[in-house]
Image (tube, each protein chain N blue to C red):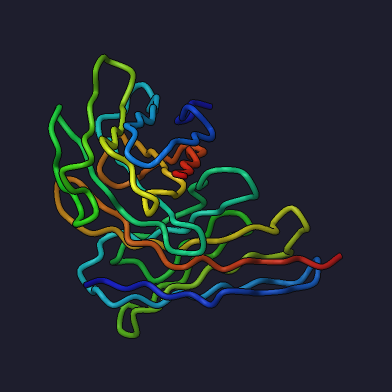
Length: 112
Length: 112
């Protein structure tokens, strides 16, 4: 079945850029997503990209999609301490209704 | 900004008991979902619901699970006879279209 993988931890200094990576196996995914989870909170939709796009920029967030390598990344520019959280990559599968397959989540720690 | 809400935030139950987890989706949304996350594991899809019926369910969603939209606002997940392995965080999500799911804060279910 579909598998989505992420590295578990990333540590960056405040003001630097963070790049969180994700690989997936199912090339039929139409939409690919990034969610953020802060302690004790739910999953907050950050951004998503349609599979026919290579890049999407939304303020400090840049999503890059390499369909050939089945690789998705999220770049956070000028990372702040408030960006410390777990970031989940998810791929959407199905037609009609959709289910998401999530990665393990990457815990981002921003050092002041 | 509208959001998905879930109650209770934490439910403790004894093995074999029935539990009902409640969700209030965003009001103009048409698609509804349940996911769960066992501690330390990935977020897993359980079931999707559209037009008053189940659209898709995972292997996890066996006969012990059921979903219902009893009125125009609530969406519930019932587990008939809980097992220890049902202990997890359960997330409800809703979407207006099939492609943009918004998640609630989750209900932590502890089965003792």
